[in-house]
Image 1: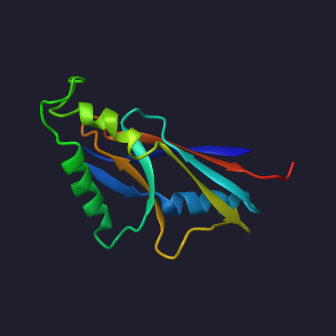
Image 2: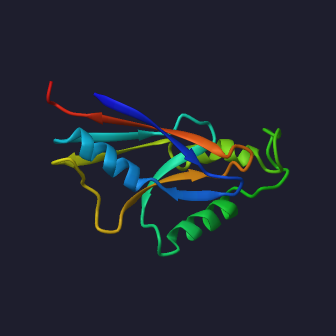
Length: 137
C-alpha cells in the first residue's frame, strides 16, 4: 500500500472543495490498477463523489443547511453557533470514499469528482489521507 497525506486549507466558510486533481496525481505516480481510498481524519468533515462546477456543490451546501441548520438546537454546543451540526454531518456524508484505479487513472464517471465537504468554520486546515491499494505485492 502507498499512502500520502494532503494538507487542505478550507478556510472559515462552509465548503465543498475539489480534491480530484491531487487524487489523480497520487494514483498516476503510483501507477497500475487498484483502489484509491480517500479518508479525512476529522470528526466534522466528509468525502463526497459528485458533480462539481455546475453549482451542484452549492446545492449540496444548501441541502445540508436545510437538514442541519446552524442554530442553537445542538447539544454539542462548543465553538461557533451551530457547531454541533458539523459533528452530525459525517453520519450523512461519510469521512471516506473508495475509487477504482485502472492503469494509474481514476475510474470516475464523466461528471464525477472527489470533494472534501467541510461545514466547520472553526477549523480552516484539514488533512486527507490517500491510500492506494494494489494486488501487486
